[in-house]
Length: 527
Image 1 (tube, helix red, strand yellow):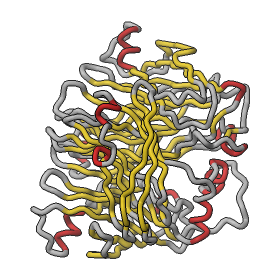
Image 2 (cartoon, rainbow, N blue to C red):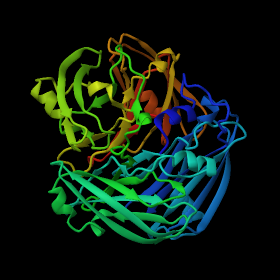
Image 3 (spheres, rainbow, N blue to C red):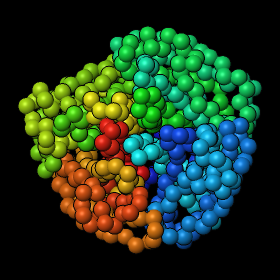
């Protein structure tokens, strides 16, 4: 793990001092565990955003398919020279090698984007999807192989466990984590774990995985290594921290749960366990009385059987803090306020769930309206962790699917450099095989926030580089939701696509959700 300050410099965040020794990024890659079976398959989605965001005229893409043991079985190259939607389908790659699609396949897809111009980010903006016609689940790029030794060394300044996702274990649900090993053979994969159940009780242990070949794909189901897991979790959810001996690749794990009665998956990515990070660079030093320590915008889905939960994992650098919750209606009016909803102490290691459906119901608000939450943290003695991460679960109770989405997302820190940034640019996928909803929030960690936003949305599809545009105006603390119920959009998209969000305001953020009649929910935050 590199320090958060070094991360901001590496990605040339607005206002950061540019390093003359920084090496340009000419290769941007991701490597994904992929599955094809009788129940679901895998796709990888991306937009030709480099042409928009970086003014790079073309990018080459090398796609490598490996089997479970890491052997290359297919490879192809293409040129990305149009701003449109692209999809890499596992089933198509398998068809090219005459694989019998009635059989199960587990392996990996590596995507390597190459350019003669600086792409800035060494990990591309891709979305991994597992899907069938009744569900899908998605997450952005996670693991990758390093570009060179300098890249490896920078990302291994500090070694910490991976954590920050929900786990379940019962007759219906099983939890897993998955990864693709890098080029270095591991003689014996080893994991030390700490489980935190919903009562914040801790259980630790370890397990060996045996030899891991170069580029081997591993799906590790916790029930196979932790025999008392159902008893530990007690029929509800928990979290787990994984300290490992993997090396030679960026160890951001695919992590999630499978359901047996309704064959489906819900996954997210792991994140740094910062509970042992106590150095100077592990805390945020840009402090202003005009800013909250950190804050986050959350869209609420609470009508009918929908629920929205915020998960506070025990992953922060040691610090004491309180959580303030404000609720706003669509027009930005504050309709609920609790200045001390939750108090946490740095050494307690508590796992907490904030249930917004209950907050809305107890407040007597109309559940059929759209509300947004502004979650605000105040850290004691201004000891603010540089990494503030939460989990966002949105689900539908009483449905065929028993799993919510589980988005790993970060709160906005009091980075006053951004206030001078002239605008923001984001993008996210549009899924066609469900009810896709894109949410935009104009929220900021500025305490007395009054800035409006003019936003231009551009929608792109797969079959050609044509697009349609929409413009919206947003007041402070307002939210907009875009869906394919819009007739123009429904007609434009015959397959999955993308939307870009360009605003004259630096604080615009958002999420995308895909709801199915089965109750399955796919979701993630914007790029």
